[in-house]
Image (cartoon, rainbow, N blue to C red; front, side, top):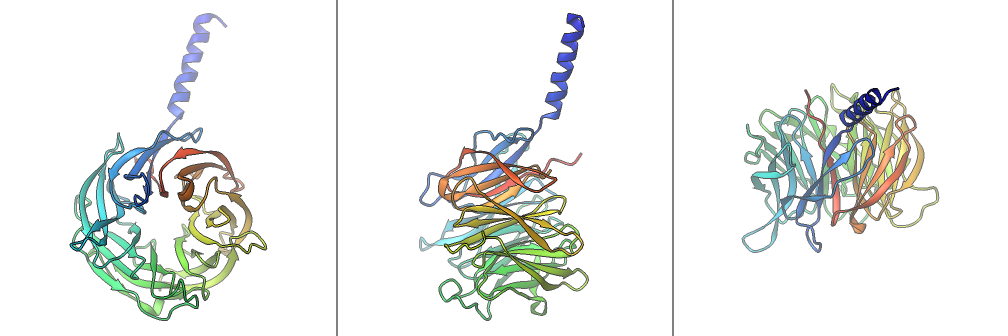
Amino acid sequence: MNFNRLLACSLLAMTLSQAHAATERLYIGTYTRDSSSVGVYTLTMDTETGALSTPRPAAQLQDPTFLALNPVKPVLYATSHVAGPDGSQIGALTAFSMDPVSGDLRPLNQREIAGKSAPCYVVVDPTGRTVLDTQYNEGIVASFPVQADGSLGPIGSLVHHAGKLGPNKERQDHPHAHSFVVSLDDRFAFACDLAMDRLVAYRLDSARGTIVPAPELDAVANPGAGPRHSVFSKDARFLYVVTEMGGTVQVFSYEAATGKLSPIQTISALPDGFKGLNTSAEICISPDGRFVYASDRGPDLIAIFSRDPQTGLLTRLEQVPCGGKHPRNFALSPDGRWLVCANRDTNNLAVFRVNRDTGRITLVSNDTQVPKAVCVLFVPPAKS
């Protein structure tokens, strides 16, 4: 091969390699109290190597501990706190527009939620027209209609949870609404209430940005388990719930026509014989629906389950150290090739390569520092 041909081949290979290489943007939510964090951070991932860029602030905000994207608008929503008239902390939601190049966040508006509440979750319905929020301390759930520019309209619904509490007198002293999940057909929403051991059901009117309680559709978790987060399977036939105090994943079958949930399995996310303190935190399903992942704070692990797509039942595969301490949240990349875990107490992000054939994960790095990192949000590639 002559020199010119060799050079041409080398340039072609380089061009193809560069074209194949891609990056994806991430946003990281944090605690700003008692830390050096200033708010929401952003960084990028090399999707070929899993390497992360240096995180940098995208927006200053107090305690943006959970983040969500609008599925149809370039807008991000963050839980936060604001100072009330008496100096106390009031829960709030903030809407930001996202710069597609720099990743910077520009505030659109902010809505306060009544009471000295602790916002802990935010999600957007599949149409992008309603934002749902949970307030842990006071057991409040709220909905907001989304305006044309993605900003938050005036509050549409505000509901205080009430009802029978679980047996744990310390953790289940009054309702604690922890998260929301919306049915894929946009008709129902279910709020995990840790203290009531309940998935509290709502009928969703996304056109108006409102929710109405549907107590006949409430689903009951195991006593004292403390349901925390949940996720629907892609075919909308099953709902998977991670329980904070139970250290389990509870599986429910789901009837989309009626909104009815029925329990079919409870499986431990903890190592056999584990006796220490644990508070399980996050749950995700792989994009192909074959695997389920859950995080355990205490043993500081990511539990991995295989999933039968026909029955919905889980089989535990393994538990893998999370690459730090207190894995409060993690997320899978849109292509399912990477898992990034936010470890709050070691102020770091751990990157794992995912074997999409087996579901197992391998630690690639855990040296990216973000103060009090507690939420990971991938931005899916723009649709062409």
